Length: 200
Picture (cartoon, one colour):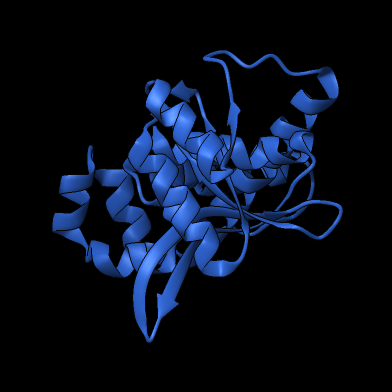
């Protein structure tokens, strides 16, 4: 749920006037990882925002985390969440100057915003599918076809090797099977469209 909500927020950022630059940004001091920021984004004035994404309500700990991580890289702290855990969290955010954008449980978008969110999500899905499809070897495709779940798959092939070469979003059985179904049916579809695609 957290990762899915984070991707949803990335797609919404342009509607908030922010351009996402990177996700899961790691902060290092003297070669040691001291923090991670969910999303780095900039506004039209060139200000950098360290954005913490909370799928639920943000508490005092989350406010402190956002503030410290932002200060470590000289950015503005911003939290996107569904609400405050309590009044103490609200007061601490105000005291520290942490901006909090609250999203309702159901977000209603304009047609243009909805189109942007859908287009971005679809483009990301296609990129994941194409990247995964081109990374799969024949024996991995066969294993995915013949296994009913991820446990079976990892017994037949080395899942560590597989997961190291495909996008993080594809590291689940449902998406892998979707990719394999597409690979399987693509030659038929291309033949119908007269593209002369030759199968693997």
